[in-house]
Length: 465
Image (cartoon, rainbow, N blue to C red):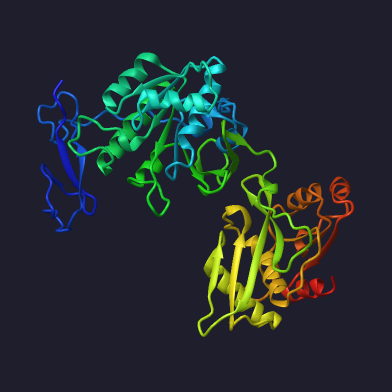
């Protein structure tokens, strides 16, 4: 079989060239030519010809209402937190892309999952392109995976990997990593845009055709985004990010895209000597243990996918110089500046000559606006040097006009807080539980809830504590 030739396509205008050029001959853009495989219809002698010899027959159409829709069957991985993020487990023929910083634990997590699936009598395959088989075996021993029957293939050539998948037909295969795989069809080096795109496309087509679930491990850039072309994330069914501080034992795995489940779902793991262990009560991680209440601390109930989490927001307001600093860790810095302006305009509290530092405990990143009220109360507490009561929490979005807007699924947030022993809350008035809901009233028994409509009301309630 003749080897396909390379064709260079301009990502600006779509112009083509049979060799790489620094400047596109069509539009004149520099460094815009990307290598790809030139394919022609079968039977065509000219592999680079894009001119069809005849019109293709029209495909049959199907009415949407006549298509039988059925639930997707899932296979649990044996790791509960990973299954939560995946939407219940691995889907037959699904393609998952997981990225994270070097050394964060991606290979460890996937090796543990493969071992659990293998022990459930499923055929598994671990394709390693960055380590030798001996190195994978050594990690397996460290993790306590004795007598593991996971099959290992140390290979980076795409054609050999596809041939192995076709011959062995495992239930699930892990490719670690996609940046090390290369195809003979292209002359560029492994990890280049062309190689990553073509190899991922071939593996995705193989997964859909054979029903083999494939997990691709991807590198990330220094900004934390997945390396390679953006189309890589569009090809796959699920995109997961493995997050965490290498100095901390806790790791978060977050779903950014999931065609078979909810997005923005998170799983929490703890790194131990025997690998990653799921954390059943992650709220305990994000709450600092103070023997007595301290100024500048306020607990927030945030939502990560379907899971309510209690996170401690800490604020420190200190005298600044001629150019006061506004620094936030785990929260949007621009939103912090906006909230400080609202606090000054509508509550009369100015931080114009103060340094303001805000931190979400535990390294979690909070993107939802429901954290606004907790951030403002923590700042106010630090500014006045007065601690909020023990067992206090708050949530709600704050608008530019000073109004406190409701947060989605407020009742679930309150139930989670009550379950963990919180007895005092300030919430938006629209999130106040209805008296007719007897079940919710029983769950929130013993909790005092103060509904507010404006930021001034919230600060007035806090002054009375």
